[in-house]
Image (cartoon, one colour):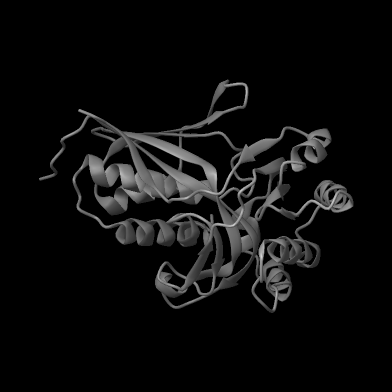
Length: 291
């Protein structure tokens, strides 16, 4: 019998931007995923969960003007998460970044919700247990490959192997703000589920790890150009950043650009709404417990 001590648990998980990646297909979820490099960001997903006789899900987006929009009343990954954890709850997730635009929000939603459900129902799961479950669901639903691994903790990350137990380096060397513009989503399952597209993406993967932050952005730009994923709007923004000597890359997988430094906002502003965030120092965490 599940022990329920709280009425509501609210948890948060940071998002993750991939600068470049390469799919690794293994025999199990522990060996399936991706290698690559990216940044765990301070913006992400907040998940509020309450006990319920039947599962319900609401996905919300809060814009910069604070206006709240209900995006969806369904999420197959979150439904799978509750099934695997053996619980039923009312789940409401909220984010401030565009969904499906390369900010790792599907992984953030799974980790935030899993962390909240674990506390709500006193399941006794470890952070690794929650991450493993979330990673398996991401792989099965083709919504991500390495975001869960990265978002377990913070930093600029370099992932050297697939799965949640692979070696990962974390650097905290980006003290200035990061900014991003987005032109819309790229349907992640379409890319991850296409052998031809993934072959081109794999061939664009850098042959070495970045030696510093500037190198990370340069490798990310090269990957975007060679992978076939870059679009004309993204290319225009990257060229504008290059003219101003601003480090930038393409949000993978999304049609957008992320750029670093205080001057980046002014360069990105002509291209659309600008989102600001920093490098997250941590992974998932409990924000509120309501008895």
